[in-house]
Length: 61
Image 1 (cartoon, helix red, strand yellow):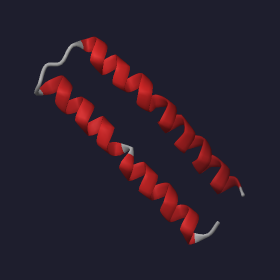
Image 2 (cartoon, helix red, strand yellow):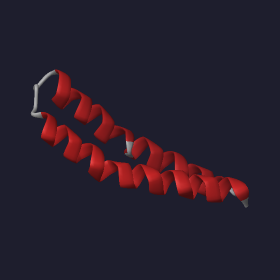
Image 3 (cartoon, one colour):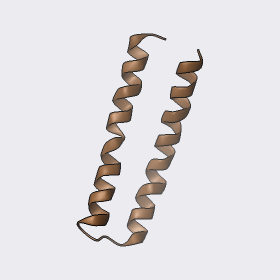
């Protein structure tokens, strides 16, 4: 595995951390309705699964 692939995986991981932090902020500070929180989780769960599959494929090669 090349360093470029590892760097790409890390960059996408860091980018995908921001929705988690924002959702937590909405939940704790802004007291947003639970339906909005669930919608955010559903949207970004797909991206996290894709990142996990990509990471697994990169490490298995």
